[in-house]
Image (cartoon, rainbow, N blue to C red; front, side, top):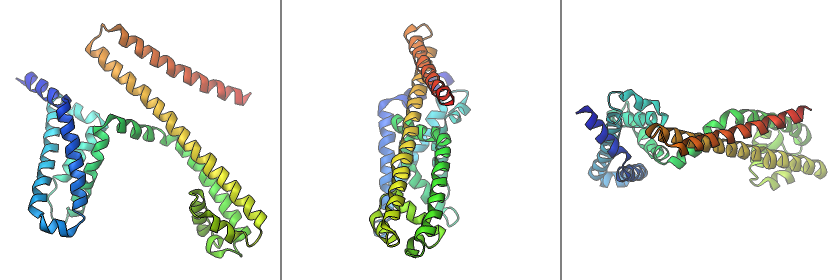
Length: 281
């Protein structure tokens, strides 16, 4: 009986119609969250909106229950997937009673339901996974960017503080000015204001900062993310191949794919090690 229930639940969860239903439900939850920001619409359609919200929450609860049942006698395996933990937390928050204590949390949870698109779409999972994986490498680039901002901010205060106090009169103002410059938002006015002291000095200052900050640093961030996406692609391919091999241990093509993926990873690591040794030499 338990095995039959587990198999049926797993078949429903993996079914394409069920996955599409979940996607439509997430989109509907997002639309409802937007409508609830209009007090007039909420007042006119309170009963309808309440019914739709209950339907959305009910579908999410059924999804969680089916996924738990699909793991059979090991329901705790459901929580080994981080995305399942996120989905469960959002649903649990939405089940809180709507009173003065939990009203803000409940509204936030209703808004977070739209983020469930990430857990429902594998491509979005790939992007988010790549971003999370790149955080460790981004830390050093961010440190370098912060150091560069600090140096340029101090230099800007000394060079342009007297002639452009609204932009370089203090260290916080200089930081804000440089942040605006690095986004290329109306930086020409900042340049003209600082150029009252010395147009040549202001030109060298702003052009060098834009080249270093915008053209180089931001491209480093993009390069790190692209590298992390390649690693995530390889990990997902390995996970799929391992799953297929577990279902069919005699499938030699899966073993070949896994070995090929591992070889590509080793070649990439070997290339990085070679570059490091070349720089040391």
